[in-house]
Figure 1: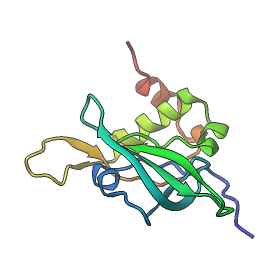
Figure 2: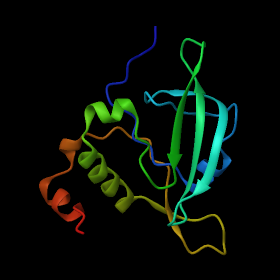
Figure 3: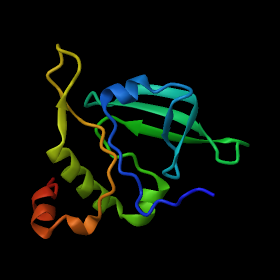
Length: 139
């Protein structure tokens, strides 16, 4: 019998984590559970230079796999996370998490600041209204 999580996992992968993901590693599946990576299907960088990777994880039944992707500096969006929070709430949580936890890139030639891996349960209600107002994005 597996233990059910009370909170979905909030995870922001680092550049090194995305770049080094390989078959046999464990990463979040699309349902928000840690699962074995059985295939890496694509890798790349977006227009801002953030690394991303697409992969398949072994299903819990062992009879198949599910696809997933992660991106440097962005919360890994899973079904479990989307069931608990709206997209806007996830954006605000991500902004709150990335505003407080940063690290320098491991490449000395790179001045880029990237987000540290953060696997923490956080209640949206813990973010007070002042923080929400400060974190809102304007176009």
